[in-house]
Image 1 (cartoon, helix red, strand yellow):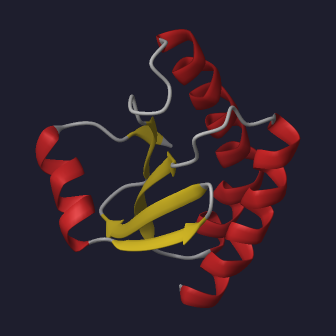
Image 2 (cartoon, rainbow, N blue to C red):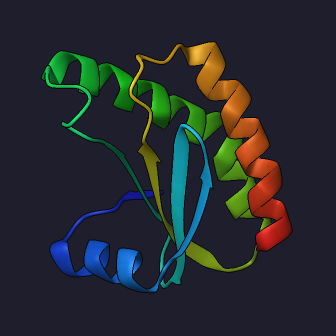
Length: 110
């Protein structure tokens, strides 16, 4: 599991990847040479970096616990970006619940 980094890789992910949304989470997936993961929280709704970092910590935790197993079952490698698009400060329990529903939705589309 690598970090998703590099402007070219991220631009390619957003231009060619498949976007799956289940409010307040959105995920962009693209098959790639190696597994790469990233999380993002917009500045528009969360001005303070402390809040964005807390949400990103929660997102990485949820990604590791629930969504990573979905991608590891498949033989292909994926570049994955998990984005929080909500405007309210989430709880970890709420993110876990939404991520499990998102995992089911991903299973159907992959």
